[in-house]
Structure formats: structure tokens, C-alpha cells
Image (cartoon, rainbow, N blue to C red; front, side):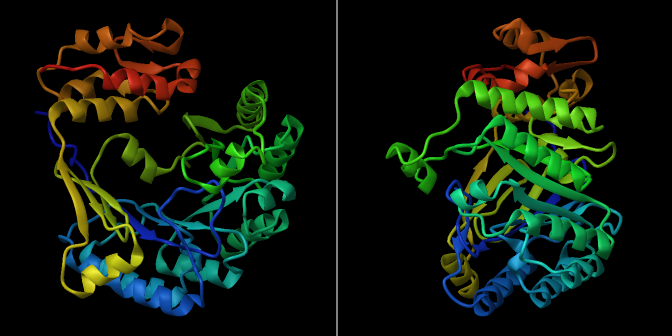
Length: 387
């Protein structure tokens, strides 16, 4: 069996499921608010407080509020949750504490209140600076509101701001993508997450494409957009430290690095996933049923699975090969005693030579290999390791 990944305090993820509207590409555990947000957030906050109280007390490293749109939650509810959170899962005040925000959902005063609560990093869902693409996929904000939101954050005192960007929108050109990159860089973000638009099953976007109502850019244009991001962001001093993530030195997302290192994490809130003490645990997805289970004194957990040694190794490799620098032999052999280095090299040799490299210190994917990480993962699932 592998040694425990719980060598450090776990990361903590808190899920807030509500949005003002649902983007056409979204397959996250998110729900559109159909009435005034006050009662929905009040009820949900109380359930989340109870979930926190019922979880085994443990100090945590990083904290990340995701959704949904966490920035829609009134600050008084956040403060209530923080009060209990600090009792059950105390945080290091110097560690990274992130909240996802959408432009147009938080004011400068709200930013100041976040800082007072101990939130010190913003992950902002910008997606695009082209109005037609924002409207096309159902975003509720404008390009100007992105700029205003960053201004509010800086004026309030935030020194760690990340922007999410998407390329590959229907009708998007390479020139339009360059405009989005330029306008994003003009805001001097500390971190950027850059994703190709993914068409997930059962989303509105998937239906629109299937009906021929929309059409994605040609594959050559997609490749050109990815290459352009590489060229422009590198020239501005950002380091591509993970397949989809770029950062100024020292501004890498510590919370996500925790995941990619296959370390323990605790997820609280509806649909949240945990990996603790070798167990993968999932909570009820629907907010109503999640809240009802907690109110009735029942566990909100709907799935739990113990991870075996072969699965643990595959997860470790799959996640580790996403990041710059890949996987160190010393950590691999420390986590999986008895594993022969030759087994890993035999697997890597199944892949095209231009996808990977190895030396006496580590194995990692090349820039080309990153483009085919999903194919590497599929190949990995077909291997059985013995140790």
C-alpha cells in the first residue's frame, strides 16, 4: 500500500451552489436563483455551519470558496460561517484563502469586508473581454465590469488577484483572443487560468452545437489561440506552472497545487468532494436535499470509496504530470515503497517520445505532452502496476 498522502494539513474547499444565471457551458454543481437570494443563502449558510460542526476538527492549510458564485453570498452569512470555521478548522492567517467572484457581484466595500474576514486571494471569472462572447454563453457581466472589479480589489488592498479566461468561443477569432489577452494583461493580474472551451454533455451549449445553431472555431484556430497565450503570457513574465495556469513568481495557486500533489483535502457543502485518510467522499449535490439531510440529523455523504494502491499511484501520476517539473523520483518512491522505477519508465515508453522526458531527478511531460494529457491519462488507466 502507498504511504498516506496526509503529510500536511488538508486543504479545505467550501461550496456555494447558487448563481444569478447558468452559463451555457457550465456542468458544475450550480443552481440558478429563482427568487430573492436572502432566504436561499440564509438556509444554506446554516446547513453549511452544521456540516462544519459535524466534521472532525482539524487544522487546515489553504481555503477555497467555489461555486456557483460565492460572491453572491451576503457578507453577514460568510461572517457567520467563518466564526464556526475558525473554531473547528483553524486556519493559518498567513496562508492562502481564496474566494471565487464574478464581476458585477461585489463592490469595493465588499472587497474590504473580505479582507477583514481573512480572505486574501480573489479568483475572478472574467472569461472574455468580447461582449458578444459574454452574451453568447450567458455571462451576466460586461467587459467594463471586469475592469471595475479588479480596480475595487486593488483599491481595497488585495495583492493576489487571478483572472479566469476562456478561448474557443463560437465565432471567436485569433485576433479577438489577442484583444482579450491584452485587456487582461493591462489589469496586471497576479495569476491567470486559461482554458479552452469544453463542451460538456447535457449542457445548453452542447445542445446548441448539436442543433447547428452554433459552431466552434476550426482546430487550427484553437491551436493558434493556445500558442498565442503561450507567447504573450511568457513575454510578460508569467510562468506556465500547470497545463492551464500561469502566475507571476510566487503567485501560483497553493490550493490547487495541494490537489495536484495528491494531498488530503476536505470538501464541505452540497456536492463537495473530500479525499481524507485514503477515502474519497462525496456529499449530496442538490442543495435542498443536502439541507434536509443535515436538518434531520442524517449524514449528507452519498458516496465513499477506499482508494487502493494501484489507484493511488495512477492518481499521483495523473495529477503530478499536470505541473511544471512533473514528479520527483524521490517522492514517488517514498510514497510507494517497493515500486520499481523501471515500471514507471516502461509505462512512459508507451507514449510518443516527444511527449515526455526523464532524468535521474524526475519525470515530466513536455509542452507537447501537456497538449495530450488526457490521452496520457487514458493510457495510464490501462496499466496495472504491482508493488
